[in-house]
Each structure stands twice: as C-alpha cells, then as structure tokens.
Length: 230
Image (cartoon, rainbow, N blue to C red; front, side, top):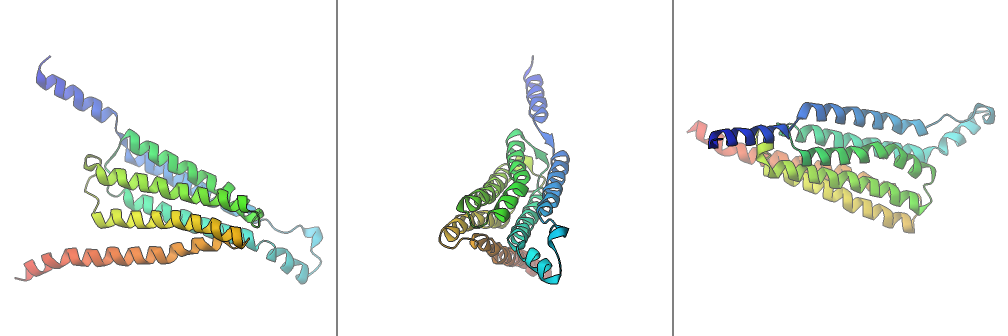
C-alpha cells in the first residue's frame, strides 16, 4: 500500500468519525422544546371544590407564585441557552465525538430542568430544592462552556472561525451563571424563598455581553470602512 492510499484511508476514517450537525441541531431543538413545554405542567389550576368565590381563587393563585417564579426563570434561562446553541452552531460544519458528547451532556441537563423547576417551585423554603436547582443551572452553564471552548479551539470543525469576542461572551455568560447559581444557594440559606431571584441577574449580564459584541463588531468594521473610502 503506497503513501497516497494510506493518507486516503486515514482521511476516510477521520470523516467517518464526524457527524452531521443538522441531526444534532434537530435533536437539540426537540429536547429544548419539550423541556420548555413541560415547565408549565406544575402550574395547575386550583381544585374547583375549594373555590367558593373570588377571594378563594385569588388566595389559591397567590400560593402558586413560587411556581410561577420558577417557571419564568427556567423558561427564560432555557430560551437563552437554546439561542446560544443556535448561534454557536452557525460556526459549526461538522460534529466530532467529543462535541457530540458535550451536546448530549448539556441536553441531559436541559431535560432535567422541568423536574428541578418543579422541585424548586413546590419546596421553595427548603434549601435542598435550591441546591438541586442551582446545580442544574450550573451544569447547563458548564456544558455550554465546554461546547464553546471545543468549537473555538477546533477550526477543522467550523465553516468559519469563531471570533474571539464571541467566545469571550460565552465565557462571561456561563461564568456569570455559575456564580449566580452559587449566590442563589447562599441567599436561600439566609433568606428562604428568595434564592431564585438571583437568576434574574442573567438579564443585565446578557445586555452587557451584547453591547460588548456590538462594540467589537463596529471596531472590526472601522478599518475596512476607512480603506474603502480612501
């Protein structure tokens, strides 16, 4: 067997270990959609027999407020991760075994979110429910960081290289969520029922990252604009 045949065989083996990114995207979209839908299941209507008037109905709905908060935060965070996954796969051309494993691991945390949200909403005053929920959130963040780092560091998997500013944004978002998850546990330890409020900090973090990316994009376009005008 000559060198050309060996090189061709090695190339075929390498390609055989790559996966179609569209299959992974379809699986991810499906699991995110199901998980985001299942979140609302815990928002059950009050028992009809226990409602005698508006006052009873208002009180019954008020008891659902912790579940509403858990649903709102969980839906918001899952939506952010779905959007981030969609944006990241814009750069991906092929998926290797390690990237596939990272994606499946993240989808495991996604599928666990309805249970974590229900646990947090039902047993809000108990610290363990907050710990479990925060671990789930941190797991989502860390797996997203692993996915982003792998795509950023393996140009052979991409159709165009991921800009450094995009990877920086991934690190800020995911690192911020890990810190917020820890903060939520600390808050819940001292103030039961209040831990999940910490996750609302994801909104300003996202705003800061978007502005940072927009500013960097303008700076990157500035030299080309100057060159074209001269």
